[in-house]
Length: 196
Image 1 (cartoon, rainbow, N blue to C red):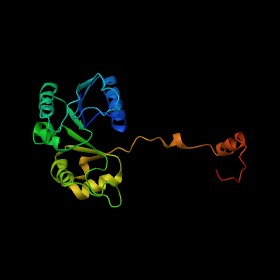
Image 2: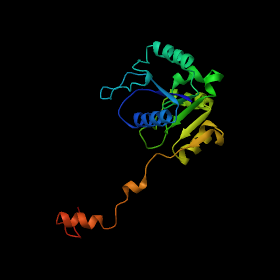
Image 3: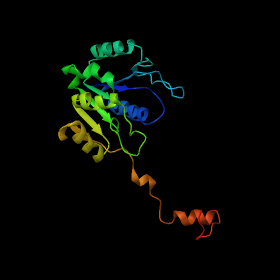
Image 4: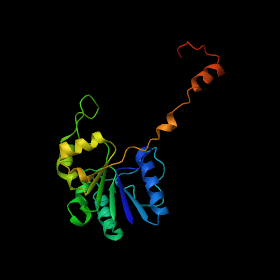
């Protein structure tokens, strides 16, 4: 299995963690995993991993990034294209049936306006992507039932095209033993009824 991960940039945050975890799982299972970043890494980003197929290409105003992607698709011939961001560059492979049927979008609540949130004024560009490109992905991976319903309602996706994979949070890691608060109060001599 050959997997090509696409990301807009390499920076600190959740996407690099997910990509590193995917790469580890895929290679441990005997597969191959590559990464292509469209933009240069952010100034505070860690170095691109050595297994990145291409990276540091500035996408805006630099057609060489598209050329690099075309060349990578041809030479690497991935079994899965796992796009972690989406965007107009997805048209480079979504309009080729060979690549569209191998494509997957990792959808995290982008592209739609949400009232009373910072993304309520989404651009025309994002709306065009949502209506015209997003439905071309073979599969869409999303993190919640809410997002799944939005994809069905606003993008017209068939329910069997959407895979729901909740964010990887272990609730047990955040459960505190019932007596833990009392022991902390005792350790710091905080009265039981004091508001801290």
